Amino acid sequence: MNDRAFHDLLWCKSRYDKRVHAFPHGQAGEHWEAVCTHSVPMAKLVRTEDGAKCLACVLIIGDHLARKRGDSRWS
Image (cartoon, rainbow, N blue to C red; front, side):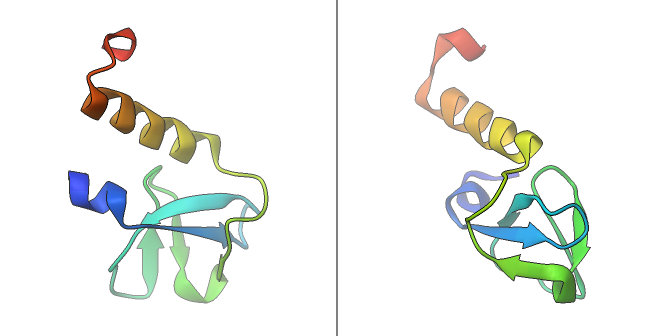
């Protein structure tokens, strides 16, 4: 995933697992894929940042930010 995709994230709750996932903005098609690879039909998404976050999405985004900032503790 490129840097731009990490800047344009939409947090949406999946009605499948009741978790809030990070989805790259601008996806087309019936199914959207989160940064953790969780795939959900658009009809099963609720656009909200409220609720339990997907741990995998949070870790993937956090790792990306740490690497971008040059935080050697994550290398």
